[in-house]
Length: 220
Image 1 (cartoon, rainbow, N blue to C red):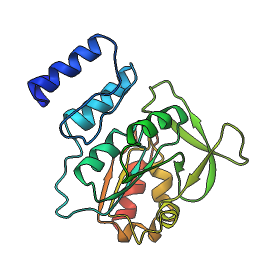
Image 2 (spheres, one colour; image 1 turned 120 degrees about the vertical axis):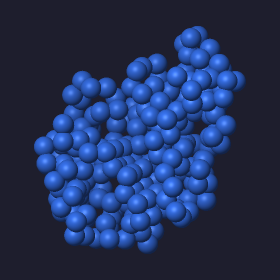
Image 3 (cartoon, rainbow, N blue to C red; image 1 turned 30 degrees about the horizontal axis):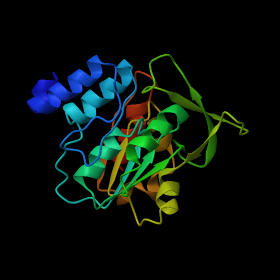
């Protein structure tokens, strides 16, 4: 599988590192800087999706200037975009602290990437992470009335754009495990008309009504 998507030299290098249990400082020609993973099947699945198959290798037809990576996990999509569009400004939003720590490590050499430890919601709120046992790339969140040491801040897309003092976001990628239902139920009128590209994974299998909320919003 590595050989199918990479040069022989890169495939052998990554294969040998993984066989030795070394998941730090992988290098690929397509990336500006090395990256690390954790020794689990979930990080590898993200690596396979983003960096081997290059699922986000999309011809936008323009050079994006501003990108929001919602549900950034360990940052592999962010560094892929950061290498492909080094002149863009990228915000990598990830709610889970453990994921976020590795995201920070993976993006620290990219001046174009700003990590943000928060959740995406339709307004400012407090959220807590729900671990459904599906792995560290499938955490969900729910709103809590009062903040606590275990809660995280939530921001809307408009809040993130305002925080970065952007006029709009050219590209928004959302892989937020069902929270897209909340994001597209209200408040989207402020930001959705101004974006150029929306890349979204829908999670009706985790939260009923996700597709309906998204399609109702974009149809307007």
